[in-house]
Structures are given as C-alpha cells and as structure tokens.
Amino acid sequence: QVQLVESGGGLVQPGGSLGLSCKASGNIFAIIAMGWYRQAPENERELVATINRGGSINYADSVKGRFTISRDNLGNAVHLQMNSLKPEDTAVYFCSAYIYTSNTEWDNYWGQGTQVTVSS
Image (cartoon, rainbow, N blue to C red; front, side, top):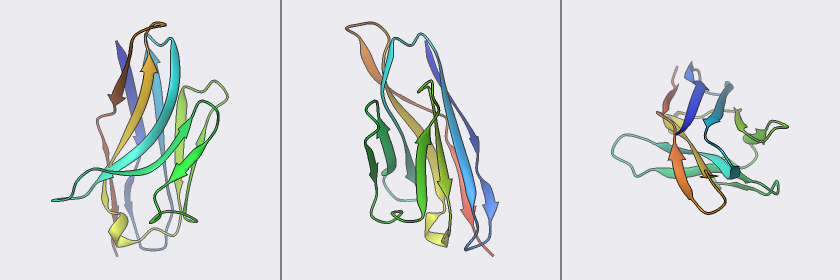
C-alpha cells in the first residue's frame, strides 16, 4: 500500500503565503513524479504544479511566478510554497504521485486533500 499524507493549508488573507507538504510512504519501488492539483467548488480538478524524477517542473499558467514546487533530497516528499495568494486560489489541494510499487507495476496515487481558503 502507498499513502500520501498532506499537511499545511488553511485560511490566509489575499496577498499572503501558505505552504503545503506531501510525503509518500509505503510500498514504494520508485517515484516517477509528484505534484499538486486543486479543485474549487463546482469546478473540475486542475493541475497546479508537478515535478518529475528528473527535476522537470510544470506550472499552471495561473500560478506561475507565485507558486514554487520543490522536493526533498530523498524524492519522496514534495512541497508547494504559495505566495501572493488570490481569492481565486481557494480550493481543495490534492497531492498526486505516480509511483512504481515494483519494477512493472505503477499507479497514480492521491492524497486526501487539504483546504486552502484565501479571504479577507
């Protein structure tokens, strides 16, 4: 079994900052990529930022220049630093990871989600 445990999030005023963290644990053979998605009420889940095993990073246009994704040295945790937050960043943020549990079996795993609310 693989688990993604998220931390961080909460309530912040517009222009403020928050950090999210996600750690993968369990039967992990290799982690191919990790990242963050978000889903606002009545909206589809959308990509926020991803980082792959090689260190390549992808950001949604809406967060470029404001959000920074990084990973720890072991490669099993990912962090999202969110600056200059806007009300439209309000959503449930989900950690996602593509993980091999053996040299032939892989799956896309998701965290339980953490609420980020940007409001004055």
